[in-house]
Every structure is written in C-alpha cells, then in structure tokens.
Length: 160
Image (cartoon, rainbow, N blue to C red; front, side, top):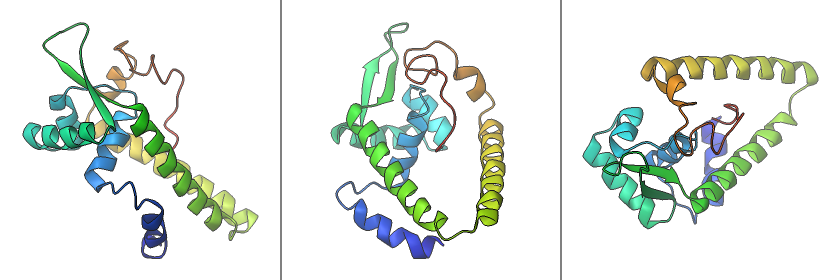
C-alpha cells in the first residue's frame, strides 16, 4: 500500500522537504508538550546532541521555536511554531485526502471493518507510547504552558 501511495504524497510535499526525523519531532511536539531538548531526545530515542542539531535546523526553517521556561529560566523549551502547525495541517490534509480516495473503494461492510481495525491500532499505539514513556500521561495535564490544558484543552489523539 505504501509503495502505491507514497510517491504521490511526496510530490505534494516537494516544497516542504521534511525528513522522517523532522516529521516525527513535529508530531511529538504537536501533542501539546513543550519539552526541553533532553526531554525531546528521550521521547524520540536520540542523543541530546543529535536532537539539538535537528531542533536547530527546525528553528532555522521556522517550524519550531525555543523559549525560556517561565518557571526555570535555565531551561529552554521547544514548541511548534505557527509555520510548523500550518505544515502539519497541510500534511494531515494530504494524508486524509489520500485515505478518503481509498475509502471510496470500500463497501459499507469493509468500511466498518476498517474503522474497527483503526480503533485497535490507535489503542495499541497509545499503549506502545505509554510503555516507551510511562510519564506521558502525567505530563499531558501538568499545567505547563502549552501543555494539554493550554493549546489542546479537551483534545484527543486523533491523527496521531
């Protein structure tokens, strides 16, 4: 399926030219968390120095922002910028359009099966995420600026 669909998606994103690691970082940051480089490195399983270099590139491209933590002036946090959010929305729109083109080829019964399977995939993905980082549920509502209570109040995990 990916071999059939990905080449057409690549043409749509030609101007964005995101590497997989860039996309992963943006997706992680788009959860509403605003981690430090060290916290982000732990979330994505990369070294602090490698993560910092990638973040630097995303900052230069205007996709993420670094800012001083109001509670701890020594800490610099990272968040998705407006430009990064717009890019993620474009990526999601392309993905949804591709999925809708596929959806049209299913019967009603097949659509129900696919929906059930996607729900199972989403539950499993959350379990994998929680096993990899058990504190993610605790951090989601910790009241930190831009956390779940901030930008994504009442948000769900749809699309992640």
